[in-house]
Length: 142
Picture 1: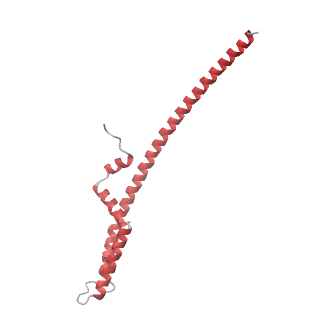
Picture 2: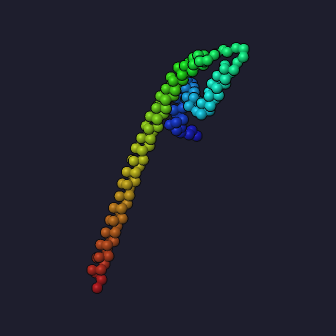
Picture 3: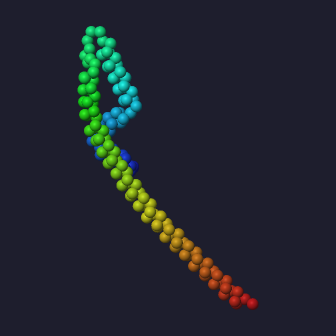
């Protein structure tokens, strides 16, 4: 028996390796873990270059470190934008599926309202028939 996939599962199945990679990178870079690890790395880089006795591979003002940050930013920005575009696609797909679900629910509610109206009309018709029968019985009995 085949189960029906949700809109989210369908969306994930359609995504390419590059799109999944962009999502993973954006999730990683947008985390406290990344900020903390990067802050420790920067602090260690600066500390080692300040107190190094023999070789300063990146002396103050840390031009190599700035170059690394620029390179990271140059790659991070488009990757994050790709992930945001995918998030927009996911949101759009979810909105479409929500709209379809709401439309189906509306149609079901309208059908139920019609059924309830028909039941109410049938009951009222039966009550009128019963009242007419009672009325005619009261007229015939002295």
